[in-house]
Length: 239
Image (tube, rainbow, N blue to C red; front, top):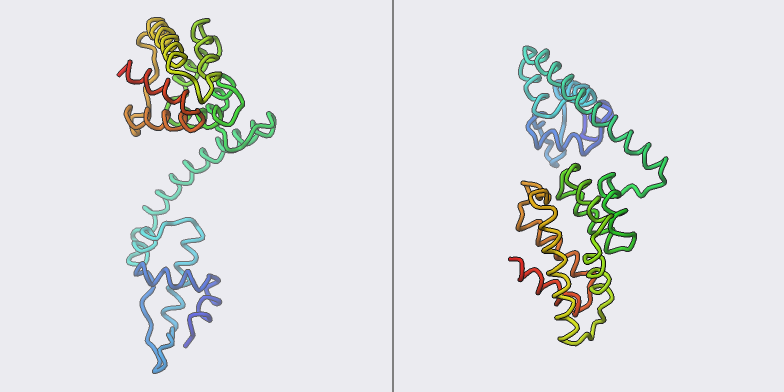
């Protein structure tokens, strides 16, 4: 008879693993002594060794449960595991390429290649970095590349609007705010006319409304009150 600690040592696993296997119904509960301590027998040890071996191969606990019930599931589970391993190998190779690219470029690991493209177009300040990270999540790679190209070569009126917006002081007057709003509406109208149907769409899992709200929230976080007022007025104009 063995205690939980002894069983874990014999099976080459942790005390937590034994407890987790009990919770998942893989390892039967043992008898208890009068003092409440668990006492495992030979059958428990064999089951624990089998679970440890199958887990080390990479089988999920659901697959392990099937194989503990019957050896007939073994080959099916092995083939399924092989397919899952192939997928993981492909993912790991892609991750390695990304890491190699980051090492070569000296880039920050928290920025995806798509986010770095957006960052090059938006700028290197903290606010641009935050927006770039979000856009890389919301846009497909193709849409983001096109969007970034548009940002990198802005029309003259859009560039003037950006400079006016981010140069607007927090205590700007109502007239100053109105002038910047007017410049923004004109510039965005022209951009929409030029881009037309080529405007990128947000990831369908996020949705247009939720994606737009997230972008707006990040933009407002880096703006002063007057700049936020301009953004609010322009968004109202185009709703």
